[in-house]
Image (tube, rainbow, N blue to C red; front, side, top):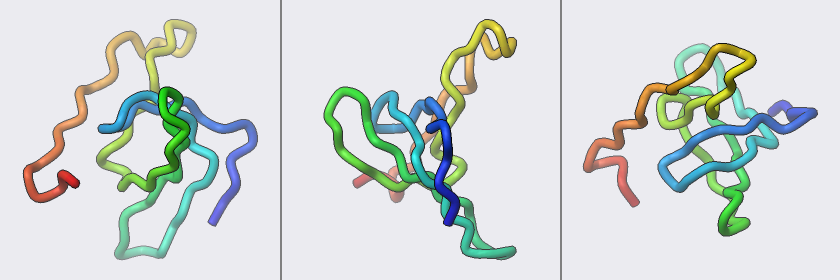
Length: 75
């Protein structure tokens, strides 16, 4: 587990938020991001494929790829 300092702004299926921790369970597992959702204050854990860096003009990230949530991944 790695505490991110500063937290990273991410887009998630639950909305925009800031990742505060990154969990790496090893070679054969996804990375998991622990994100505090800005609008609600909820804290969720998302697999790497379910997060995107937020729009950042300076970094050249103008339109992050949309997040596709498969029906079996919905809660």
